[in-house]
Amino acid sequence: DAKTTQPTSMDCAEGRAANLPCNHSTISGNEYVYWYRQIHSQGPQYIIHGLKNNETNEMASLIITEDRKSSTLILPHATLRDTAVYYCIVSPGGSNYKLTFGKGTLLTVNP
Amino acid sequence: GAGVSQSPRYKVAKRGQDVALRCDPISGHVSLFWYQQALGQGPEFLTYFQNEAQLDKSGLPSDRFFAERPEGSVSTLKIQRTQQEDSAVYLCASRLGLDPQETQYFGPGTRLLVL
Image (cartoon, rainbow over all chains, first blue to last red; front, side, top):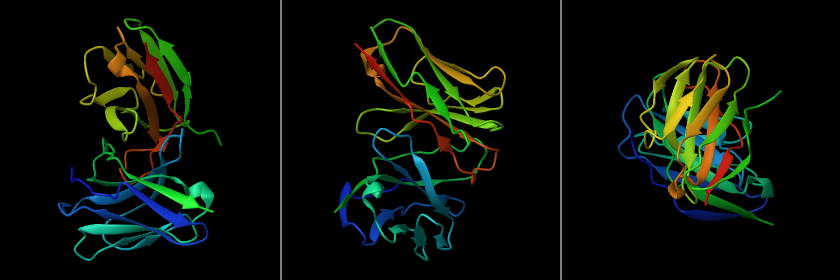
C-alpha cells in the first residue's frame, strides 16, 4: 500500500475552516484516498473518500491534486467537536481491503 | 439504528490468562474486520471475515491470537496466554458488502490491559 505523510498536529479556531494536508507521492492509479477521524476513546469514523475528482459531502470536502500525489481535507466550519485525530489512508480496491492507518494528524479546535 | 457494539469495553487480565473479546456487527453486514490499536498509534489490521470465512489473518501477531465468526454475524477475538505487549484497544469494524468503497463502521473498541 502507498504510504501517507501527515503533520503530527494542527490547530484551528472554532468557526474557521480546517485544512488538513496529506502527501501520498507513491499512490498508484487504482488507489483511493480515504479520510477517517477518531475522537478520543471512540472508534474511527469515516469522513470521505475519492479517486481523482474532488468530493464533497455533509461532513467535509476532499481536494485531490491533479497528479494525485497529495490531498487536502477541508472542514468548512470547524467546531469543538471536530477535535480528533484525522487519518489519511491510501488503499487499492479488493474485497478484503483493509485500512492501513498511520499516526494521523491531531486537530485541535480552539474556542 | 444500532451500530457496531463490542464487549466488554474494558478488560484487565493477569499475564498468562486467556481473554475473549466480542464484536456484534451491524445486522446484515457481510464483511468484518478486527484491528489492534496501541497507545498513541493508529489502528493496525488483524484479520478479515467475509461472512463466516476468515479470508485474511495476516495481521494476527502470533498463534496466541485466534478469531472466529461461526455463523457469519457475531465475532470473537480470543487471545491465549496474554502478555503485557497485548495491552491495546481492539477495534471491530463491519461493512455491508464486499465493495471496498463502502464505509467501514467501527465499534467503540475493547481496551485490554494485561498486568
